[in-house]
Image (cartoon, rainbow over all chains, first blue to last red; front, side, top):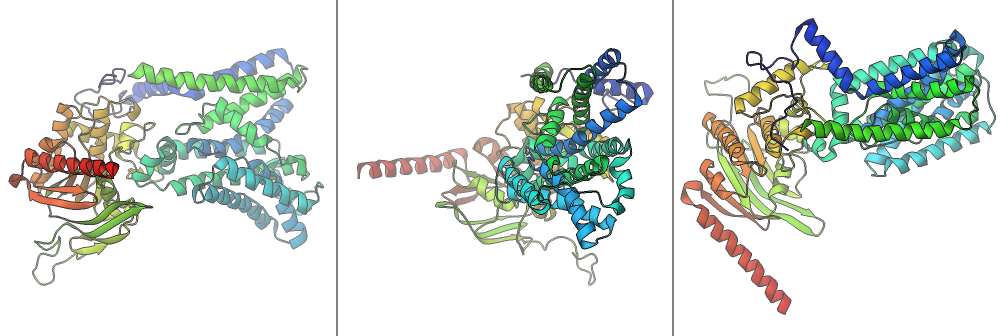
Length: 348
Length: 271
């Protein structure tokens, strides 16, 4: 390896502190296009566009409003949960329990409103806080008791699942009448779910790439020892990521309940977690820690949804779809690994 | 802290003669292993102290205690004559102690300037002020004469010496009053080592920063330090001004220790 980084743009003598690609609108344009080309999201974005074009041509009803709503409703829950999972994957952890937080949260809201006469807003907040608390427990088990998060969240997931099944007797419940109004804004209006997804994705991508918390998350995942030597509280960062994930799980649980207008115990499963991680991986997040993008995961979730919805529309049954999902995950991961190797090799 | 002199005395800063850092009877065990038995050392304001010792003598443990990464089992640490308990890296930094670790504590995935500002980021709330950090990082590296073309590259792409220079720059510019450097010359070529040594020399001339350098290479370090301490088996066994000692004397002590350990091992093996 040579001592200098040849590819790096030379800094002009008179402006040693300036941004590497110059100022002004032209520099900004260049920088934007360079950034775009370097981002892993770009590849997924192109794949998503190609898939939309393909199904748009192949299935005439693909681009209808009804189907786009449908598409958005498949994408949103995966994307929202992926926000949390990406943060966790970046700092080297995983949450298997999020699908059971999702299952329990609408039941909790229902119990509070119907059995304990808690006001709707408060019941919703408590249901969301339950997710945050579950995340805290996951984080504390992982950080303080040093359990691998694969195990700690496996355990808490089963416990939440059992709690939900025991308290509900595994019967579905109705959405409390008084909650239907606010429920429209959370999940039952056609575009509500995807709008929330976009809001969460944008906010957390900004947090990840432009705030101290995001920087420290990458630091913890990239070099745990180094990060703590630099004074970063590893516990705070990791537990925070678990709490965000728990919150997202609880929120999606409420959304799905409002959107389907029923509280269904069979919503609790590993599936949301698996899809979220698949979306994250397709979007360019490596499971090795230290890197990842939330916008990428959103695009990954969108690709998965387009595949699900598109194949359905052109009449291919859901059964072989898993083969395609599996292949997509593997191709994406191989691309991730190879691309980052190329990037590194090309630069030194 | 005193902010105003009420009776005509100079209020700011420690009284002359008080050590910037004083360590008394410090000890640390890890399970059955005693890393430090009884450490006593002192460091005057503006002094550069070389801490020498063989591998496993406890140098890095001592450093980790001084910078708040680990707590000692017993003993006292005094800063400017006042006892402090350093429970965290943040606390030690707030007290004015900063360290460059042997493993550098750099994050490969982050850019040069983010590494240089790690945990001390400049923020224009709520966002990072990347522009300002980039500019200052660039300036500091230029001041140090470190040849890194862009502060926007990930540190994974830099050479060992460049990485070391970044880690050292991070601490030097942290406004620390006591700087701990753990093997700062370890991964360096002659040119880069000279750069670090110049930096320490510069700090020394300014006079208000005290430095402890942990090093293997006596020759290079003797040139710039005021005093040498030798750490053996968890204790300081040697304390001389650097003008009163020499590379050959230090070598002899270390070789004698090695011989003694070897003899003991032979004796134990034959017994």
